Amino acid sequence: MSNRLEQVKILLRGIRADIDHYQQLRALLEEQRLCMIRRATDALMAVNEKIHAHYPQLSRNTQIRREVLTALGVTPDRHGIATVLSWLPPAQHEAARSRWQQLEAVAENCKAFNEKNGELLTMQYEFVQAFLGTEPDFIYQR
Image (cartoon, rainbow, N blue to C red; front, side, top):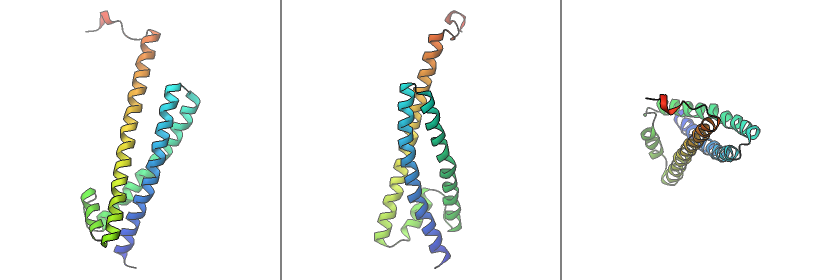
């Protein structure tokens, strides 16, 4: 098996693995949101640990993908992915392209869900600050 073929296989396996990781992350982000709404602190801490456990693996997979794309002589971005996928026979090309699009969609979905969780956390923090009276007095603000 050629080195180039092996690198393409590594790339495709990494895409499949990241889809699984992001799907798991999405479920954890939903759980995180419910814990914040319920103010279930202990459960929230446990979910946060699980969420943070996904980041190193996703980061490693991204780094490997960048290295493989560079080794294949293409740019380490979505254009490079498209170029590599275009090398595949039509049936495999379509399947791989579909998986890549799925990965992009699930990653974007996780990003959006994470941002919504951040907004919820900020609103809760502001509420607690106002409720406890720790907000600066509005008379002294400029």
